[in-house]
Length: 411
Image (cartoon, rainbow, N blue to C red; front, side, top):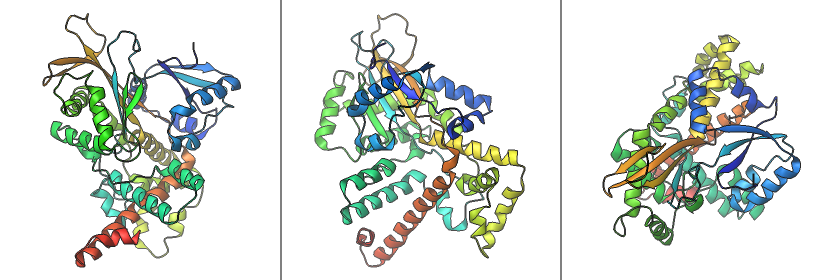
């Protein structure tokens, strides 16, 4: 098989004993395993040489976003990989002549937590989505980077971990997961307006829309032009019809309902799961140790008194849910002519253009979150919440002066 054949990509697997493999083995819920396997598609494990992996790294370097190059390098010392389909195209590739358009969406967390283990100071988490709060932190980090005129190499290092943004997105994950056609359309329009790292569109496997930051008008016009060969509509209406097509697929396939079910395995939030983590790694709980006379932390004693297998389940479920909150959904469409033979794929009918499309959907980026990053996840969670609370505090102060410039100046 040719190294870069269109319909296949190479996915690296952890070596025996890595935290990712251990956590994956802990997933004993058959319903979760079945959903993940069906959504991922066919996987084939193959043995590879170092020279082969070095060739893969060279051939894919120019196709990867700059901030990803340093963030996730190819492990050229791995002895095996998983071979999986390229979900941005149909298995027949582009040989049949019909264009294939795929949309990659990173939905993020589709519910608000209600855990009793969330501290009183952080109850904002129960009312504001994690995505919206994280946007504020990312924007602040960019302002800090610019104000201090960081060197390119250091800025690139920050980008690789935080994917800094240039403007706040209006996207609300709750809309996308709502099951309401109108709200799903609003979510998709917001993603198109500010795609950041949450939306990409591919035509025959090549990226045509989506990047960090908002899109310029000329790029949106180019996107409209790309859609003309795919959606039969008047000029200026192609993007709107594309939103309707993707929304119809989300509703008909029900993929986000299943994803949300897995996300909700996180029942007690990171503020509860971190306590279970310290127990399973047999370390003193740093949070309880540093709590001093804070009576709030008394409620965490119940977590430290449960059997270790229950602690293990809490952490396992949290990590599985974290993967589901950070994965991407790839939905691919191919126009169908009425005289074509019966398709093996589900079909979507777009009433506004009287067109039928073959459709398939898969989840990607399902790498298990490592156990040894639990403290990192907790610290990031606190940083996100504290930054958002600081923004609200500055806005209230600025509002009293009749301006909202206080937050801008404060950063």
